[in-house]
Length: 197
Length: 149
Image (tube, rainbow over all chains, first blue to last red; front, side):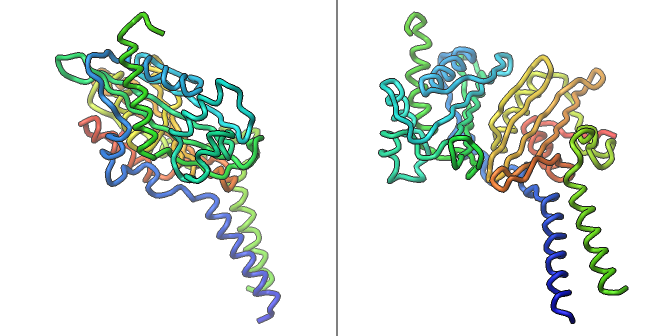
């Protein structure tokens, strides 16, 4: 066989495979329930006694505002608030921002533990956009109680202009949810004492 | 067939396949590919309930179970949309509307993309992911998801 021909042939076959792969690369399990949906649901959900659904939603939104998120959308009838926050890398931080960023660093997943303290002091290492949705619902029963479920994800960029995406992933670190709910417990308590900040 | 014509045929097949992925933008918005009726039936199920708000809340809960962050919802319009990030990006919107006096019609449509590899969004037209979604939804609704023709 002519070696040039086999080389051409190889290139075309690769191109053919590439074209096919480009069209059909939806993962098979994209909309399949995971093996343990309850574990995630429990980690992401917290129930509070003696509070109504709208109050709990407002308190949760307040925690996100404390953390520097902007609230993007909401629907009070369905108990939804969605919010996002961009984190820039290595920017110099002014007073108020430092406190927020240190609080935020506690919430970030601990994939790069050695960098954590450094990141807290100098801003996060990689620019990223974090998106969160809060869904509140009244729990069935005689006593007033409501639960809220939080899901969070982030897009990590290589550069400040967000031209190259390096990671798109859910935030699945239990610490993130624990810390969020700790803050929410305080905020939910405050929400009940109407006249405070 | 000579080796040259074979090569030519393969090159034409490549171009044709790539053309399938990259539709010219102007009218591409009307080109959902495949059969419209078939796609609609993949994406739609009927449920024996008329409680629209509860159905929307169940859609939201199911999407959260599947790893979505909900970006928008509108009880009046009966829509929910969200994004799932798991090394790829999946954007899905779901509508819930009445069907006759006894049923609700739920329709989902989703787009897949891979931002890390610059793979642009493509509409999901394979029935399997929608089947999985309705199977999960049906469990949370405690109702059977009925195929609609």
